[in-house]
Image (cartoon, rainbow, N blue to C red; front, top):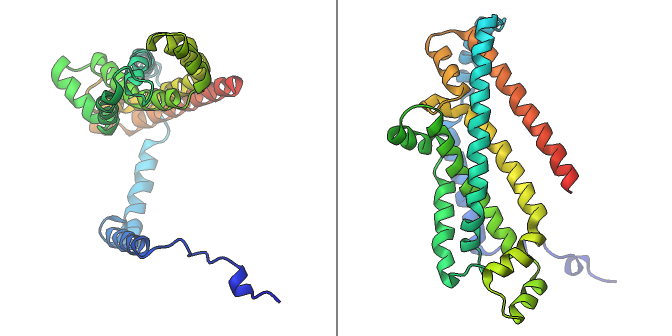
Length: 266
């Protein structure tokens, strides 16, 4: 009879002492951090009445026609910021991703420079970029558009480069064998193969841009976020609740539209 203890593999057979120490250290760090930054039951109990009071002051939402018109204008501006910024960012992401893609870039090992550049754009938060552009070009929608553009390059640049690296090699090898240039290989073999992936990533970028553009107004980069900040600064909580509901509807509608488009592509 076979000994079950020898037949059954140990679930921890791949756990090395280094992995064990890392897991224990991570667990200790999480527990220590929870004691410092996680809300305590007392804080939750104390803050709950204040939250209930705030929600009560936010209801019912302000539905005055003049205010709704102003919100509509700001929403339109927000959508314009997201659309233009994402469109420019997606177009610029293609050459950046080509230069950053391993094995595809015409720069050889120099692709690491552009890969690091894309990582830098993606690492810096949206609000930080917005603050930088507000300081350079001034308050308004232009700063918001530039922020979305840079954020989109960081987002799409990574996924476009990964898609180019994973593209089918046989068509590329065939074009290389007849002496085609790298730009011709990109246009004739790589882009046709990864077109569905590029479209999918672009739709995600547009959806992300809409969500991001909502909050850019908090630092003066235009859009509906600026109206929301004014409402909270002036304690106009009914106005704030209206704006929050409108933002929810817009973001939800954009997610539904992009989901349907992705479903058709797939």
